[in-house]
Length: 379
Image (cartoon, rainbow, N blue to C red; front, side, top):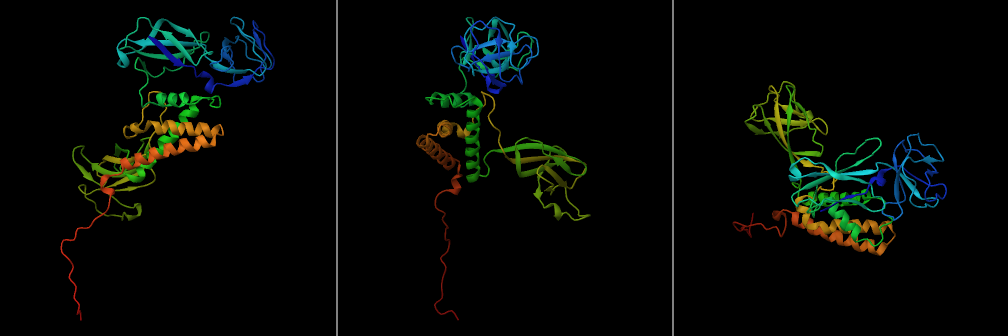
């Protein structure tokens, strides 16, 4: 079973260029700028996926401007001047395995620590004893410093889900004939998330109850509570309990409507907002809990395994089309950009129509129970 992991270290690494041609077999690389390059760090000489790109470890001495020595084997290729050099820090990929699927704990495999294969877009490990029920994780490692990154998301034999960030990203890349102008996957991920917010906002515009969330927030003896939920936007409904069992719907009031010494009933509570996330309950009693149904801002997709919201899963092509449109615009292909953006927009219109509540569509009719009588000779 082949287990792949994407070579992405260069995407966020400090970058510089060779000052001169460096011959095959050298251990000295003259760099234009050594800012961000650390002692015993790995460097990637060349762009990821290029045949003669290689990874070398720097010496333990602090990098100095103009030259850098490596403590590993000499370079395997000649590199021309202005070849990009990345301070990727890590020179190995460690493959881990869980024999009980994603519910288990991943541990490093025997012979599963490989050199980072920067001359490819992927570093791969062949688990010859693997099973379709196993799950895998990876992390990057510096063999000299012993430093590791965090673990990746789970990798299974089924690959990434169809509605996942990784799958949509790869579909965009596969449809591009020439993606050299896309420097990193983060750019494509930004496009996907831009369209995610476009789709989400279009749904909310026709259905105010789309993407609601619920959270319980405690309040003290002064009736004050603070919503800390990250995607809280605005409250939709508030219910109050003082004993944890009986809930009463709260009525919203303006903060200026409270009158000193005004009496309130615990079975008819009121609430007012004192800012974006702070609320006050009347009566305060001895404290309690507010169950708040709220409009969600929504979160972005960050991890490869993050998936689209359920209502959007029938419209994955619109995400691909929007990503392609942005790529074509970046490459000054105006016609292709307009075509793909139009295709994405049509899908968005279909999506919003589907999300529109059925009682808000179609002709509005008024039933006349009794005809109105008129008098010709009204005095």
